[in-house]
Amino acid sequence: MKLGNINYENNGETYKSFFKAYGHCWSKVCVSNALMLLFNILSMLIGFAIIMFMVPFIFPFFVPDSLKDYLVTNGYIDAEATAEAVQSLYYLACLVLEMLLCGFMLVINGPVQCGIAYFMRNLLQGGGSMWPDIKKGVKENWKKSLAASFLSILMTVILIFNIGYYRNVGMGGITPIIQGFFTWCLVFWGWMQLYVYPLIACTNLSLKDVYRNAALFSIKGFLPTLGIFAVETVLFLVLPSVLIFFAGQIGYSIAVLLYLLFSFGFVSFLATYQSWKFIREYVKEEH
Image 1: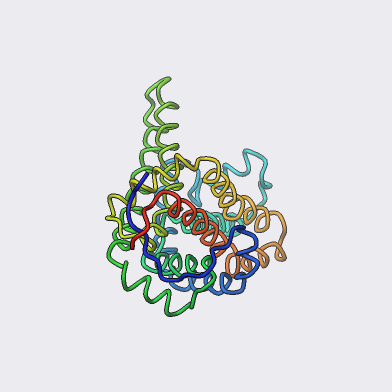
Image 2: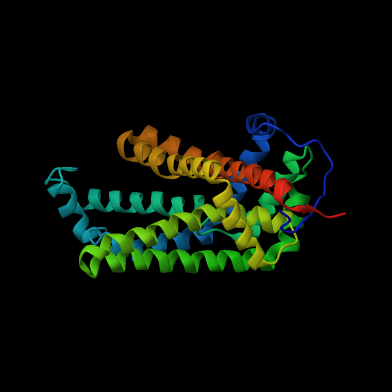
């Protein structure tokens, strides 16, 4: 099936194994991770605002004034816990969730993510020069990638709102079905984001065709996509939650190091690796 044209910049040997590629490039991926954090500060603030204002639509207790009652009632904390302690838990939970939004590429600096994907694609071909590649990837694709990041934020907010609306509106037995539908749409939208920025960086497709192909890749590559989604869930939800809320100050320090040096870069490298496999398989090479 021919879906578009590939942009080739390097002619090096493509790595056949993800872990071989990551092992060879891990230091550059770690630097890329730090760059993603640096250039996504605004995205994180947007994600933080989405969490604070949208999550209560789904979980009404997720506000500082109601959170303590919920935690005490369900036995998570003692009734003697101070308001300051509960507020700290609230902001830490917001931190984890907004990092999850960025880690799932739902709220992300599109041009920078596109530049990173372009650089990582070149790493996978046995080449790659960080600053020139990132600069070129941003310069050549900033319009499409910026539009993609705006669209992703808009769709994420709409889907979260609909999940919360139908959770609270009370439509009888059909409510869980509608909720489940919008939840599935949000999950599938997150799957598509794995492929959007590598497709923008590595092909000459229009934005409409980028999303079309991202959806096709998510469906045709269901198992690897599900696997990457599971890795994202562990790295951006399960592991930081356990470290921050159950492992004390040491756990918090480890979680911060993972955010700074590993999680974002690893997921982006994994997504680019899988995207590049699909692109080479389904996308026509440009001569």
